[in-house]
Amino acid sequence: MSDIIQLLPDSVANQIAAGEVIQRPASVVKELVENAVDAKADSITINIKDAGKTLIQVIDKGIGMSDTDARLSFERHSTSKIKTADDLFAISTMGFRGEALASIAAIAKVELKTRQENSEIGTQITIEGSKVINQEPVSCAQGSNFAVKNLFFNVPARRKFLKSNTTEFGHIISEFQRIALANPEIEFKLYHNDSEIYLLPKANIRQRIVAVFGKRINQNLITIESNTSIISIKGFIGKPEYARKKSGEQFFFINNRYMRSAYFNKAIINAYDQILQPETVPSYFLYLTADPSTIDVNIHPTKTEIKFEDQQAIWQIAHSAVKQALGKNNIVPSIDFNQEQGFDIPVLSKNTDIRNPQIEIDPTFNPFEHKKPVSKNPKSSAISLEKENLANWDKLYEGFEKENQQSDEFSFISNENSQQTITDPDISEKYFHFKNKYIFTPVKSGLMIIDQKRAHERILFEKFLNTLSFESAITQKSLYPKTIELDAKDHALLMDINDDLKSLGFDIDDFGGNSVVINGMPADSSNQEPEQIIDKFLNEYSTGEVDAKTQAKEKIARSLAKASAISSNQPLNNKEMREMVDMLFACQNPNYSPFGKLIVSIIKTDELEKRFN
Image (cartoon, rainbow, N blue to C red; front, side, top):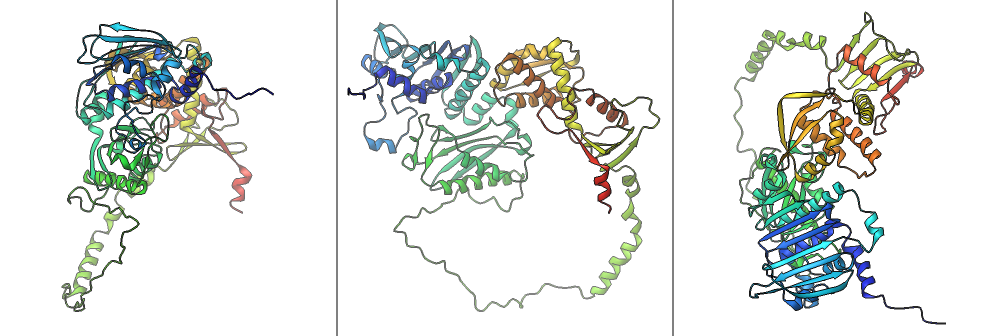
């Protein structure tokens, strides 16, 4: 029987490795920009075409490479940052595994131009699918210029599973934001299809955060700083009133490297206990500094998962630092935060001598020697207080009658004189409004309960979906158009679906600089501010990925319905409740919201009667 074990060709091995390192265009951006940072570049420009599917170009003003280094950089496990195994335990650079360029060259057409400062001429290399096409001298600027074209051109199955341009470019922006926030001392420029997305000058951390996420975030930031023997933490956390339901402004950096950590995220969220609205996430931008020998960044190919030597202690330090910052800003009760910043947590070793704490006792202490002075005539004080209460007893009932007549907890509304009939003949013409959230109405079988917010979502969803199909919406023009600033990801998303939004009645123009002008809103939108509706809509729409056009329209209608619906504590008068019930039962599916949640529930008469047996 012939041998069946064989070595894989380098090109195939590189394609397999690329599957771990290069998952999408954003992965290429991450690897190339991190290499530019390691090359000590003070300015980095990224040009993107078609969300990276056609072109990813990264130009840096770094130290550049020699002819030999340029050629070797595309070989697997080639690196300038690791020489011995011991170096793995003291890593201070971004890229070090020696797989990125080899992986990129295996699944794309790559062109590199590079020149060192002391060289008069540079070198140009062209590679396609791991095969070197040519290498020749070239006149070029100092630094490196990588152009990655036709990503996954030789792996069509991988290219087929890429998402829409909006989704893929959103991932690119996420990677760009992480690197730009970690390196505020570097100038960054990002262009997509020749349009400027970001132009970030050199800055400090706060200025860089504002430049990335817009001026609106500046008033949201609270300074945080803590220095310990284990780790140092500095940066900013967000005020709880600005917390959003969508994550995206939560960043951990360790030694200027972005990292993911659900474990430390819980430390931050727990520090906001009882001061956040339900299902909201606060912003945070935390920069951790630790001895490189105490962390391991080599546990994942993308180098975003970090292992710490003193993980539990760091959790407590981060939690305490956030609590302290909130307390200093009077957001949570504080005891005394005027003490010097920083505290030492001793690190115990195997040879540490652990002793019981010493308790000092004063044997001469007598708790009865010092007594607080008491009133000489306590009875007179009590009599005086009682007389005052009797004289002012009527003030205890002030406002009671008014509150009793206009209770917001439970109101009864009857419309017996109304001439309008309900669509469902089983529903009577009596409504109860409970806690400004539920509509109660008697029916033949018992008591019907309607969730008003979900009902409104269903009504708007079917209306928006119908409008998207026939483009018959009416726009209510604003007397004073409103300009709102978005982050780059939300701006790109809004512009991508702007045509569909126009068919729903929105009139939105691009104002440049990630800002838009709201000229008009759908005529039947709620009384919320345009900025609130757009923010809620983008938060809802950006969760999940939908590419098919029909599905995308349904998602737009569903997301906009949730953003535009009335709140759960919105007071409704008799006419409004009647109209809502009418419109709900005119819907194709009045029982469930667009998100599959129950709208209508009936408590049967028999069940009510059993409660009184």
